[in-house]
Length: 455
Image (cartoon, rainbow, N blue to C red; front, top):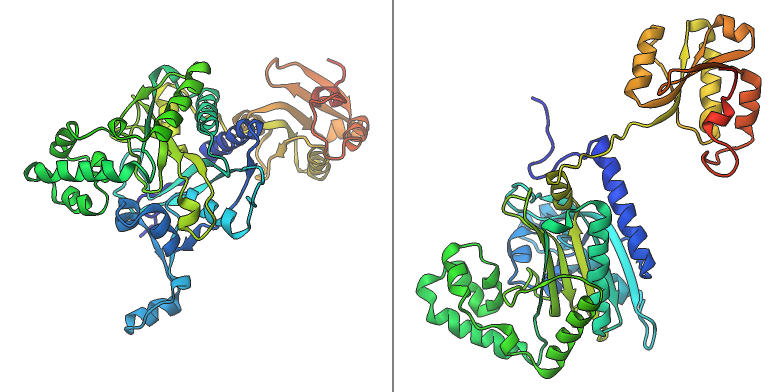
């Protein structure tokens, strides 16, 4: 029986893999304008990092994390033994906790230093029920800014994300930005207690899971997908009525910055996001089409206490993450297709096998000069080679046969215009040798210049 990819995962085939690279590079290019630098963290971390950082009451920690365990430790558990904390590992379900851990561990924000602005991209893992827009292994792009608590950081991040969505092709007219404030450690406890009391008063209409959450973090009930719970929570107390003066001023400043940048948003007092580390600003970007029930394509917020939770000094933070797969669905729903991964500047075709060695040499000379070049490796007929050249999207075909080789020439066809010309082989190779890997298209020459000849 054939072995397929694990449930909840999928292969990024060449066209989509190329688009993912473009997606990531576009994000990094835009984020770099705002001062963000790349960081890479491990795919797995100590489990305690996520328990302490994300929160035990979240679905991510309580239900969805994949545990990574060595064969030796698995045997130890099966024999009734225990595993040391440093050996209890989990695949990362999100990127923020790992980046904050790295900032703390390597002291990237010493006292009085400028904020650390970091960006990342890569796979995340959650043991969820696979469905459209929700995979067990998925790709995210994200940023984290640690060391600054000013609301301009929050607004800057939101603006930056919306600029990226527009650049990558997400239809902005079908996109909505939701914003809210979660308060801080001064005002949120009173609000949480008010929500808990409200839930207890309506317990007969709430699911068991929500009532369990009520004792740990009642704000999680706002995320419940049970229709009955959602209806009850519509009447729950609003955080806006409980914000302290500092949080209210911070939230107002964020909105003022967004207004000044022309960013449209909707205030949603029920927006809490899915992780416990958020304080003050939270936001989410949603789309209307192509997502099934999973309509969020990105979001984030402020987490001013997370560094302390993972053992660091008090360090305010702000960040967001966006899911590649969900953005791709939104882009496809707008009628855009992934560009083809196939690309070829010149295809060298052989009339017969007597010229294969010279054709091979010409192909290598093109590649060494920074030109994408291909040739046939299956001894096809000349007609079939032209079909192959067309399939790989070659701009030109260079035909080499015994007669051309004897005359020291190669016949070049432009695949768009079908015009043909003869080119001196030694001159073309000499010009190719001048570039030594420098890509064409700059100030020096183009592939057409190299293979210019008589029409």
